[in-house]
Image 1 (cartoon, rainbow, N blue to C red):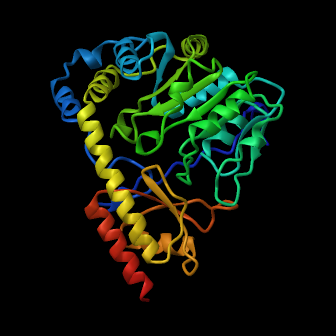
Image 2: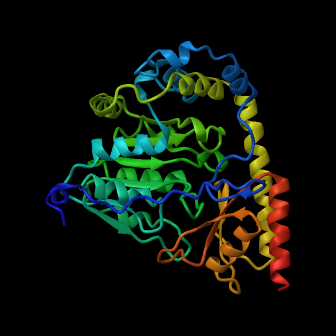
Length: 352
């Protein structure tokens, strides 16, 4: 090892989903929304002036914070925004998880959590999900330096009811609990309604999935005003201009067009429920997803081989080579047309 390398912080990085450059593919591997953003967003993008690119953005992203606060019936000081929920979560790890006690999160979960824990030198322990990939709330009633879990979970799509989240919060009033709700709009009730009851709760959401703005990188957190103030202190100590003017302008339009938002969600949910039925008929098994994806396995088709066969046909799905998940594929719900092609491939594959 070279001398200068001895003091470098080395981590095992997060591996993002593949972003293929091939034409004419069906991309079901990174949970993007298959429908375009709101027409209001598209019109605002066309009307954007060069001023939006020439000048620094508002460091507080006030217009977007105000729009989100209005939608969720919060005050402005209860909302924090960042460059995608990954940025928001990384800031939250850095801000809130500084105890000598271990951070707790599920063993099958968003694979960025252990990366951030390692990067920021946070001790952590993984808590096993049960055999149905459900969170066991009683396992979190012990000493810890914080708790984080997605709801619905990634990559399983399993949703935990609010009464279980409330139970975890009731038994962990001395540590920050983060509920990562990247997929909450596709099913279930948000924990945001518990914010006034629990001052240690932070709820994180994103525009990348349900609002079709993955490319704009907009994420946000909601919580007690004191938590949000601590987050902002870290943000302004790190990079005050985190969001572009374009992201702020388009994010406001996306929040305000509630009718289009609901219409897009309804289409995805309807397609998801149809695909569940057809995949069960083909012999696949999966948890009851409340997200915009399925986490599926088949007793006769090794997941790695099936992923490779799908990729050859230009259909991309996600495979996680890890304990408990290495015979599952995560399949994003695309348009009806895309899912028909996917299901057609599975029917032909079954006959081989």
